[in-house]
Image 1 (cartoon, one colour):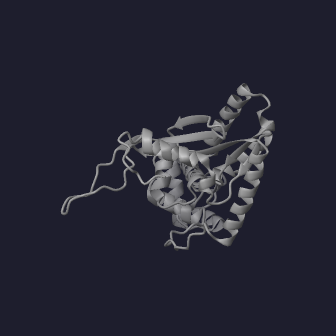
Image 2: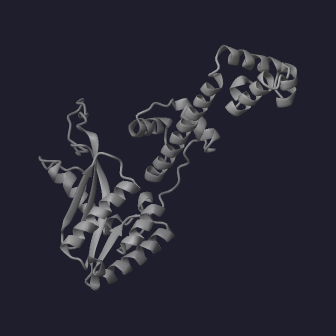
Image 3: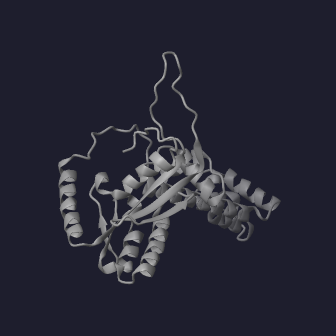
Length: 300
């Protein structure tokens, strides 16, 4: 066993046995199942610096804090994006949230040894949007929403998008031997948009400069509900909130928040983009307001 493999508690006990209980280095080595040379090395370090054990404790606490931050960052990334493609995502997340640095190889160590994750080649699978399960769910969702609309209820569709560039043109004509490249007009920092649009065309809009997660979503929903209450105290009786199945829409904290709010909430079926009016709002925003020349962008 090496010195770096011993905990501060074990080091403290070894030094106590030698310095206080007067055990020989050999006896201490047998008792703690380490090499006699290691015991001698620990005792010399203690005699040279009495704060030696405390320094080990401080390093242990630093490693514990760092590993906890890595684990939390990985869980947050998986909750919001589903996939973790590279260790740099975790490094950037920790840098932005805690303003501290971690090395990519340390992130890899935590992923492998603490979270039991492995970096493997992606297996491509067929698109599942038109699987039997998804089509049945979309049919049931469509029938339910038709009943809601026929009953005269107000539907408010809530969703998120982001704006990371200001030019959404995808194709252009070019002459032979002419480059077809365009400079990127990046929006930095990236803007995240959270929008609620109802069946009467009213729009409730928020902009942030952070990735949308459960906390940001709940904050928007709280402000939206406060606004709806100021407009009509009885809005919960005739209003249905429509959201998609994003992971942070279905998290335990969000479910508990929506349950306590006593609002009627419907989760859309998988791949039900055409049943989400807010998608048309995002398309219009990127085709017109962010595209003054009205050049075709490939958006609907």
